[in-house]
Image (cartoon, rainbow, N blue to C red; front, side):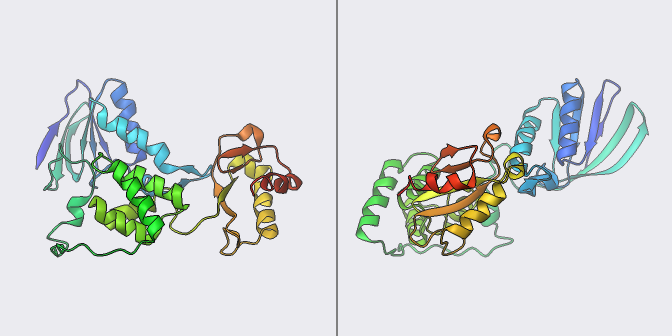
Length: 292
């Protein structure tokens, strides 16, 4: 149990580390107040940190919140008390005494980088099984074996090598094959669960085969109002999609994106990163015919 005594010099306690509490803390801290941000969860962010999209614009919740969380953590006027709850408040305006109960941590907060390995290897929650000294054999075709080893060889020993390795494999094969991910896990000594966690988080990666050309239809507010949904339905009706997103001849994969940053050219589509704006439906096939 710890106690914080707020003096009349201007200390403020904010209860709750959600997006509202974080913004309030930043506003108060930037006004010169010492702020104690109390949050019962292990980290700040609240419900918004768990969302994918926000209403009504469909903007990424993480993109909106993350800069604020980082700024809050770095602000010298803000002291973040996580795993903490306000259990008592006495005094009068300008001179309150708050009693805060903090849950014990078994991790050094100064050294923690949020990797999550302590959770995966917690002996209280999970039974620990020793890894076999013999590496399992992963079957790869000869051409794939040479290509993957070339990619891994260029990044072996480099700090943070997983992302560039996955990016090159995704570019080389147009998706991330399961057997190759298992091979990467063994060669880089990285848990397969961590690789899948990253591979499923980023939209640029795919776990299923994709076409030779990626067609993105913007579904942002401006493009939607100007008929992008009709583009999408027209493409689905006029191209033969085997699984709902990729054509049978593996020529095109159709995807939607929230915004391509070209609102003045709406409606917009992109093919392999090339932007085409101010389109009409009859012009779409003329664009796609360029990609044989």
